[in-house]
Image 1 (cartoon, helix red, strand yellow):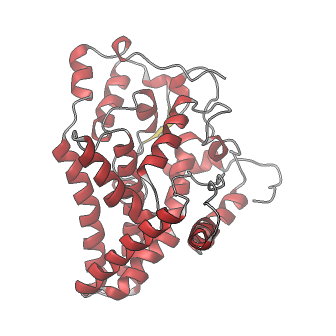
Image 2: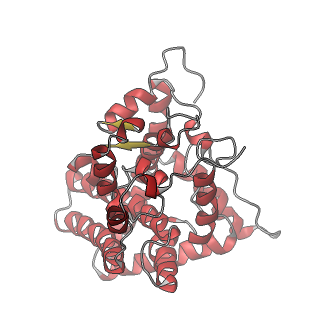
Amino acid sequence: MPAVERIDPKTVFTPGEWARLTSRSSLRGMWMVAHCWGTIAVAVALVTIWPNPLTWLIAVMIVGTRQLGLAILMHEAAHGGLHANKAVNEFVGQWLCAVPVGASLAGYRAYHLKHHRYTQQPEDPDLGLSAPFPISKDSFYRKAFRDLTGQTFYKQRSPLFLELFRRQPAVEQPHDDEHENFLSSGAQAMVNFLIVNAILFVLFWLAGAGIWFVGVWLVAMATWFPLVTRVRNIAEHACTSTGPDPFSHARTTHANFLERAFIAPYWVNYHAEHHLFMYLPCYNLPEAHRLLSKKGLIARVDVAPGYLDVLRLATSRVRPAQAA
């Protein structure tokens, strides 16, 4: 199957518009990483100062969403978007974004660029994430229950942990048809993950919040992070076209303040614009959306009013549900 058609930006934007859209700021890239970790710190401080079930729940949701935010910023680094200096981009993308959540920047980049090249085609490594939809509501509820009870976390992470004890060379991680395959396999990747998380535990402990490393950071990684990753995966490509028009291969979802805070940080909801012009920095995607709307091209894009609307569409199968 040939690669999907690429849109020539010269046929869509004026030179001035394109120059504005492609303008990158290394300072802003570093600010996003600092903002992500700062938000995590504030959430942990909140539950440390006012420990109660409500602040704990809010902290877990915020931290889980920002763990997704770290994966999103790793994605930005995979496109060279965090810093103009390649060494800085690679270091920050790997050690401050990818490794803390169990990923590898280099491994993710190769996988992800193939997804861009063959979006919604048989060779797309992410096709399994979108092909089963729509599903039944019961099937989605079962998947969400597995996410929120830590079953998805265990299914994904335990084989990676066991690779530490393999005597033979590590095998390639099996593809997970329910979640984007950003987790990195191999003993060294797991060692990196454990070392960085041990450092995080020390930092939590020095800040007087050692109990919340488990109670918030790890609980969020085992519960809310898998759920919002699933919702993001569904919103991006589920029930979109597999036809030849590249405008129809991904979805943009309008996100209100609460959705940006608890589901879709760092403009990840503008996924159609990202696929059309994948080297735009994420903070310029809203402007790309505005310009496409102004030019009448957004009508070719699947644009959802919000994440609940996407989930209604993705869970609209009415025939008896098959096993999830």
